[in-house]
Image (tube, rainbow, N blue to C red):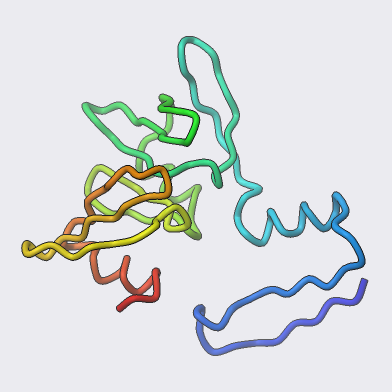
Length: 145
């Protein structure tokens, strides 16, 4: 397979184009890797341990020194601390408050509040609050500000 690389000036210009006759396991793997979906980590629920892909996560929240991972399938516990997950799940994940990380790929829309915060509605119709200190970066990463 022929591979082309072109240097660009900013992150906003970065993109990958894959031209193939059909989607094979190798092509699917490359797409997952490029989109950051290849990352996965352990979570638990009802005494069972599950391995979930980062792409399934809507947001992660820390409450009373416990970390909870929210997906379409439900809420899970994880042994990881919020700051550890923030490092592990770079890319489309970012801190949106002192106690929460959100998956920017799961944001449906945002609405500014008078207080300077933003309400972000996710694809699962839940709303998370983006704290004032994180608004500028969230807007930049979503391409709206």
